[in-house]
Length: 191
Image 1 (tube, helix red, strand yellow):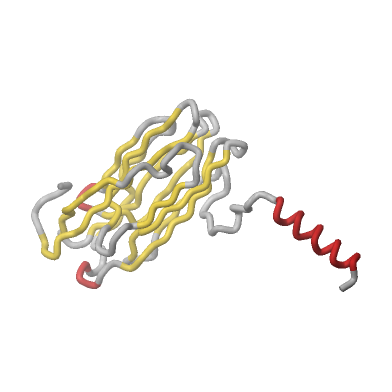
Image 2 (image 1 turned 180 degrees about the vertical axis):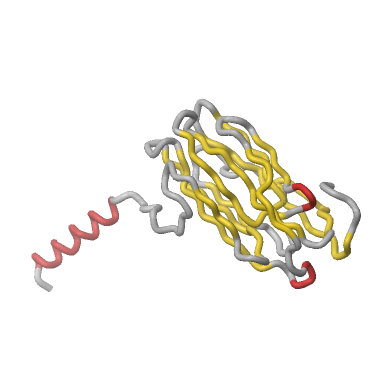
């Protein structure tokens, strides 16, 4: 092999290897400091959430979401709505009202607080009731890290979240509220 060509190829490989990992090709729904509105297709619910933090980009995160069709026994959603909204810079706990499940998320970035406000898009399936609910551990585990949450088992759904905001680090940690749904209609709301 030509020594000049080999040196050129090795130089190019060394340059590529030294570049930081590019997080721009991960299917993010937003750019830094941009709002977004993500909704799963009709009859699907949120099953995975991923985010990547950047201090130099306004202490903001890129976000991506994945959806999955609901089990056939749940049928079609009978109603969907945007639930309560939080204010940037504040802690927030939100569980979909009327036994709803999370089928989307919208968010708006605020330069003044270097934080976002959040709102869940919730869908109601007949009169099914949540049970066997749990909270995940902190996502991300530490502020300013990459965060990822995937539903741990089939049959669990995201009902909401609890989030804390660090005014010093300008970042959020999330604990997602996961529940199963009864196989029968019930009369109770927000168990």
